Length: 207
Image 1 (tube, rainbow, N blue to C red):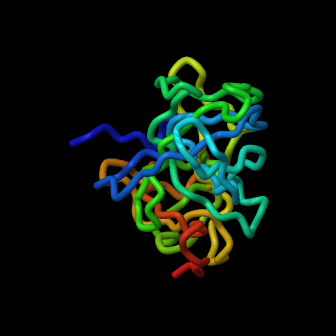
Image 2: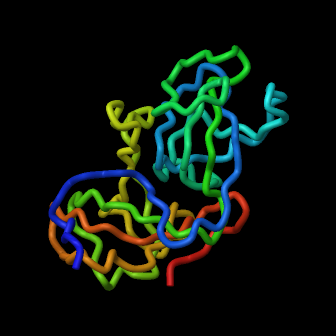
């Protein structure tokens, strides 16, 4: 038996759940508006840059994935972070200049069918078993500021934004087997989810 974390507010962003299906290297262009932390969910930047490590697609560096842009196309979660010389770092800070082309590089688990483990924020009401198959939005703090000491994301699920809306960020699959799901406020159960508005897929209504 594991430890029931449903009452513990300890966001860790989007962690790989099960098999890692695929990951690819992306660039973060110089002087990003947002920070980039391990386990952050990131958005396709719509273009690419010629870097000293080849041509690399960039992530969106000014918009955080929080459901405010219904047409956003999410790529996946960050599994590794590097500086402009490909040295491992905890995170890429907003406004970092790097080599004046890129602030750094990130590996992203970007398969459309990848599953992730993510904590709900417990705001207003909790996600419950009746919400399985529905869609939910991501909560990101301002400019995606994670935990600097660890380099880990603080993104969570928005407990109060669950519906069949096809434009919401992720699809709720099932709760962590060790967690107690409560129809109550201040519940921080961990859920296994899949990206709903994926860059390589189309929007899907909730079940």
